[in-house]
Length: 492
Image (cartoon, rainbow, N blue to C red; front, side, top):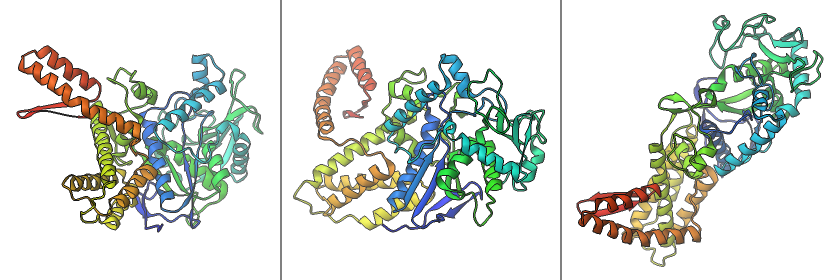
């Protein structure tokens, strides 16, 4: 399959650029994975669904992709900088478990939740705790090159040694002040210097021997060491949430560039991608704010902000209907709209499959080349899933309308083959079209007219309590009833 030009918005250069991997035919991609001290929430779902589609589409276009996504199980402190308690150590105290028990528990739950969303597993999932030697070696290199210094068992990166520090976030060193996210420790030379290695006291549970004494790695050095180990000193795409742009990714660039001597012609990372956040009534959803809804709570409907459980495929469909760089504002109304759209897509596809089995394909052929081109054009424009879904949905809907009018397109089977492959392989949102599901749909289609007749009789008898009870029960089951002058209709 040809590889037309894909444009990616590069956060580093603040513009869209034509994607050109450094090795023809191969893409190296690293995405910051979760810190495994709690269950994944909707914000995680948006980030990892975003990069799941990026991987899927690059493979669809013919590239071999090595997708690395780490697990942070040590070193991520509670203030996201150099102070506070290790997030896993804190959770282990709360749950009365060993830190590695916490890591195992939430790593397993993370993958279970992502599997249900239809995400492909990364090719490599390195753990920070399993790459301590690589991190120590990188820190030693930075010290030897004059970019880091040891102070009382702690090791810090000297930001003044890197003239390009701040290039990703646009922050200048003179903007770093004590009391902000970058905290001035007493042994730092500059307020913006960040920890590469932290000294551990006797009570600290997660610690390792090092040339500077017993301690543990800083949060930022982990990703630099692991990405380099599996993708090399220069690779193509680095992804993560917008909140990671500073300080995490800024510090990654600084320490990796200074350790390896990369330059403009051979940068540490060629394309930086950041997905925007999920909000609730305009406020970021997150664990630290106490308004995060875990994916497990979406799946079972147990959160106080949810009225019922939600299908993982509907959640994925909802997330992909906005561009990854746009804010996604959550509400159950928005989820209901996505559920309705997903149900319609399923109905349209089932109707097309029935029509494709017909021997009366007398309609005009569908313009397959144009349909492919317009759908891929949206994806080539910085992975615009919202636009791709809208265009393909319209084509599927129009094909169904033609079939309903008796003009079944001559190449309907070919169109269906490509459309379902694209929905499944690239977007990961192919509805279940199995015989069992089809039979269930036929049962619902047969029962609904009977139920609506019973409700109509109740209304005619002015038995409003029964009529309302029927409608409320159907609503709980995800079935919407629309009343009009000519009667009542229903939809999923």
